[in-house]
Length: 346
Image 1: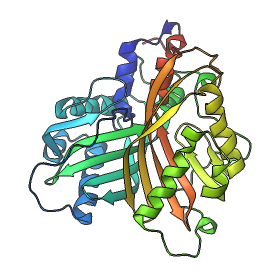
Image 2 (image 1 turned 180 degrees about the vertical axis):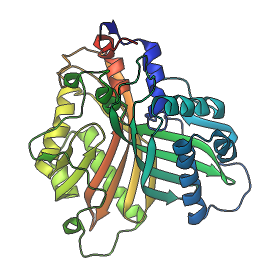
Image 3 (image 1 turned 60 degrees about the vertical axis):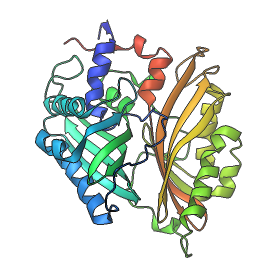
């Protein structure tokens, strides 16, 4: 643990979170130019499953058939990936975590866009990120957004808990990691929304649900956390990708305000909005200057930009459950925290 975390080790470690790492690119979604039949729900689910099957088996030929020749994967901490680079990342992942399994938790379909919330479990039984096998079992959550054109994946935006991966592997100490956690939180991550949070009412339209989700997330701009009382169920559950779950509006307010203290000038932009049934997905970018303490990091005066993806489940006009994946590694790299972290001897 005597060496500083090098940029090379950082980029190598991103191979695992390449299917999980953050979608920082704010470029608008490209408009399909090809003339093809509309994507069906069955086709979308099949492509989503085949994609992760390729990661689970390491069969790169399957990705040749699934990814467009000019495929682009928008990443957070390095150049965008084309199809060949994406396949290389799969190889590095399989080498470091030979038993890695990606489990699909939820699929959301809106036109040619497919959102997949997933969990990766694996054991570090191979060389990875500049260190030898540790035998450490890891669990990493993530969200993918695919744009499908004529039966193949044309573009991908994604985000995953790279920060948690680093912590689990011992590449970063706990004090500089994690997402704000307040009293009233729990470490469990139920996959199904608690039945008591689902109201006895008709689901809102996509437009109505989008309006609720956008107002909810816009609290990061207004800094008015009292809006959570109006927009969220009192027992709302928020699954932070980088920390324990937040349960209840009081805990949610405390956790959110901690970010406002650290980045009082932060501004959030919405890069992509997707909706199906009672679920709304928002891909976002945050920009702000760290002028306050941020969970073990003293004020740096550094301006940082990072991104993420949130999913909201809405019932009776209120958010009852949400999931968030953010580029915690990229944020800490911009703040200079990773320069203080040591890597195990290789």
